[in-house]
Amino acid sequence: MNCLLQVTGRSTTLPSEPNEAPDITETLTRGICREVGTEDGPGYRFDYRVSEDDNPHNAISCKVTVSAHKAVIERSGALRSTIIVVPGESHSCLYETPYGALSFDIYGSEISLRKEGDSIIASLTYEIYSGGIPTTANEITITATP
Image (tube, rainbow, N blue to C red; front, side, top):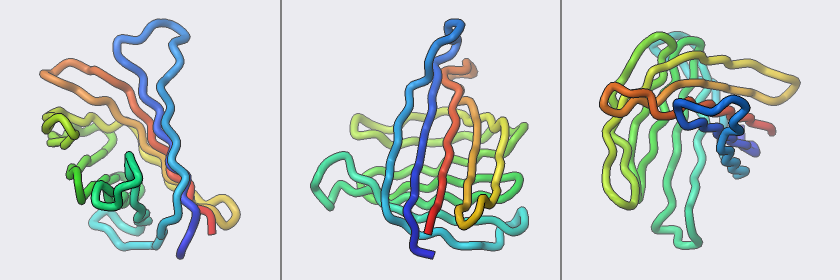
């Protein structure tokens, strides 16, 4: 379905201070949400594009596939990466930035996928490790509304 996608990211630097507020980023964009079959069973795929500036050549295509026990976040275009989140597992990732590629590990904590009325809501939490040390705790929530 064509939809409005709200993508909210929350990130807290580790170790964090008590009551430290997370950094929050929000993207509101048009996109597509569809039911898909995955190796883990039924799930949803969210497709959308983002750009840091007005140049369409710098746009990044994002494809997020979420099932009950696995999420895969793929970026292509000006910058590329694939992040795999599986609760209780660690996966290595190469993440491109405008300043070069970063290598780190993603340790999955939790995935939830639910319907609320006409909306589909996917949420995933994970930690990023660099050199074996946890650097950030992260949560991404995607809400697709027709």
